[in-house]
Image (spheres, rainbow, N blue to C red):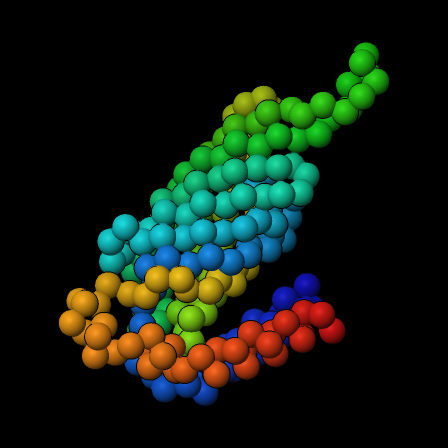
Length: 198
């Protein structure tokens, strides 16, 4: 958890050192770290905006349980540049390992349920980086009925596709300028990698 806090601090400081005019993003890929043993916990996150305010997010958890989740998220801007809050909901399917005493072996127990989400989303002005923090409670319906209220998550993503600017504007504002140059982005990524490994 200490490493996560350090990474967040480093990225926010790096972002604050850049010039103000934030750019939105359309598609981003990264990693979500969860605070609790939810069905969809530590996972790969792919987020894609279908319009300027609505996004779909796919989550794939590769531990135990293995899970696939989908969310529809609605975004509203806040006064700070690049910062938005969002809310939404969706569903998930997971496979939990359980021990069968009769067969004396582990089996995959399928689970299905609903999930809601509310959080904050930040896009760095001049770097292809996006951070978000969220609360994502889960209500499991099949095969057991239970509620997980404590699923708080932190997500760091690289933006793969830029914003909804018209093509003419994007020609005047190439990726190297929109993102503050590849050199700055590379330095930030290398420093974050060093902190995580440390």
